[in-house]
Image (tube, rainbow, N blue to C red; front, side):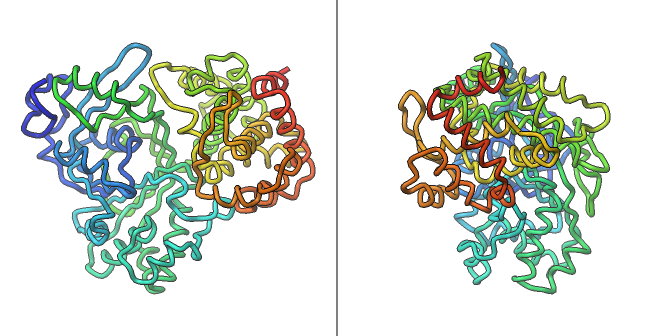
Length: 484
């Protein structure tokens, strides 16, 4: 190696691995909130492939990404892994990285830049500080209240509204707000959160937003595990330079975007994005089949001691369970878009999950279950119950989450911490719960997760049966029984 990746050393990278456009020729027309690994492997990849647009990325929770990419002039390696093969590509679409904690006012200022016409977001479900069951902004959230109280905005919705207010005040022009998180109907959902905050912030601002901001719905799909030291070492050996910002991804990638914009945007379709009139059918299939199976494998496989998703899918019992969850529970609650068959889709999902090169941990996928369950599993549960059927596989997945929250240890005795914004609520409700029926009642009582499903005696009975079996026989025996 001859040094660290940067604009000055880019010429040392083998030609086939360099950016398609000289990074210095890109203009930052996009502000991205939440510049983690997924964005850099997905939306930044599409932007890289379709012209001279650049991105100003904002990291919210820590300065880590800014520390990694700042000295590298925004450059980093996307390492695509499949089996034993690793293909590197240095991407140059990211032109600037801000740490919101250092200067929150700078975020609104960048959003208000007249050269910016797109704001994209990947901040995870919990970053929106909303109620997943009602999709409403939690206006009583302490951080939301602090933002509305006059401090420089630190929540994502607060930063976004502050930026939109500055655009309105300076005549910066219309803007596209493109949510790329796994929220149901994510564009309209974020629009509702923004309008609710704006109404509390400055009632007059809502009219400007309605007239000047578009919130297209999207569906995003690519598996992006956390990069390891081994990944960074391999990327360095392939490009010939140290790269502290390496991200890893599978070959598969998909981006479906509602064709509804108010301002200029990159021609993402040139890089393979699908522009459609309605994202809803794609979104529902992905959330209920792929994401639902992902969460089920994380909770049930994790309880059984599987560290990685690929490891769980390599176990035929868990693979069969995930396939049944997708094809026998979830698939019958969705209307797949034209040209998509749910059976082959489920097969392809398991092939992707089985990729041993992707070290996606069950612990990583199991995070923030309170924010994910409604769209990944509970929609399937509600659909099956409404049809007069029992959601046997989805119910077991939810029971797996309950056992995960309740015991906080694997069946091999390894303790873990429940990483969830409602972890304190769970602990308080589970205090004194020492049997499956009591645990089910305690957790069903978290209405912001379960909503009306909490009142279903059939669902309560199903969860109690599944949790009893998990407690008595273990996760592997439970999934075998479900598939028998």
